Image (cartoon, rainbow, N blue to C red; front, side, top):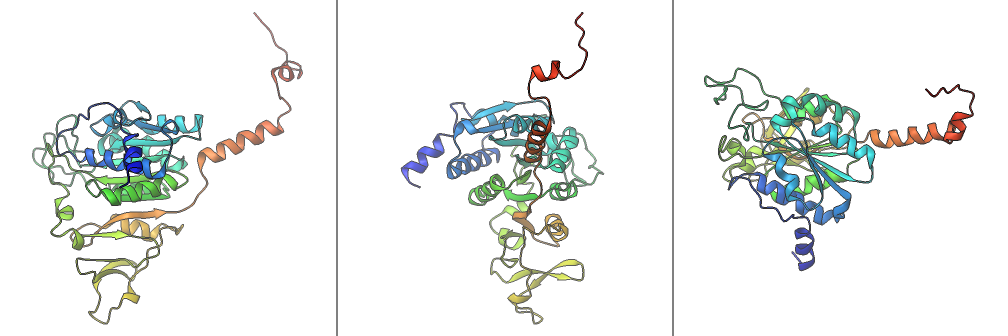
Length: 338
């Protein structure tokens, strides 16, 4: 990295001491976001970082940008207001699986449905960390915690499925310690017009350590995850000899070279396809039946709420006969002052 890039990276760091636990995955996510800003070269005063409540929501303090530490579950609503008030801002919402998907679930699905041009980074450690270890909406079924001592009997949310089900047009997934991949998907999220969701599989070393280890450990990560790239075959594996095909309407893992399977048989990833059918299948893949999909899973185009809002307001202003307060008071209406 050149000295200029180092300097640019440091320009996005605030003077506050980072107060996350040593080893927490949040440190790596913060690092990735700052690197993303440096590579995109967005001026500090054109960025707003909005958060709710939780360990993840400390992040705005550590960014040398505008920031707002808001209330539990309401960051999506406030980030939406910030974007509508100043559409030129690059708005980033920082949230966790509890903040976004439990108390904030209603706001989360509606900001996606409206397709407001904000970027949401969802830290998913499958636990409530700040409130000391209760199970969250993404905790695995059977998970034992302080609030589920006999194992939770609930099925967890899948953030990708929830995003696409709410008519989302951008969904990506990465791992906290995979800095290069995280920067790539965050840059893609920033360039996407509309609501972009980036799920980060993040580790809580205190209350849910190694929750993602079965897919993140270097010994078997290549065989248990697949990094999707638009326009490229869906190939994975340590030896790059495994791939995904359609078997009827279902995805299927195959081995290239077995049963007559060649690389030409492997599905090619189309992130820009408007039809979300394959994107949903990819987002829902879980180990051990499938590799977990990383990278940009969906990146399609749709009308953007804030742009439509501005266009509608401009049209109303242009067509309105009332151009000023004088026009209003002389338009024939009766005004009474008491």
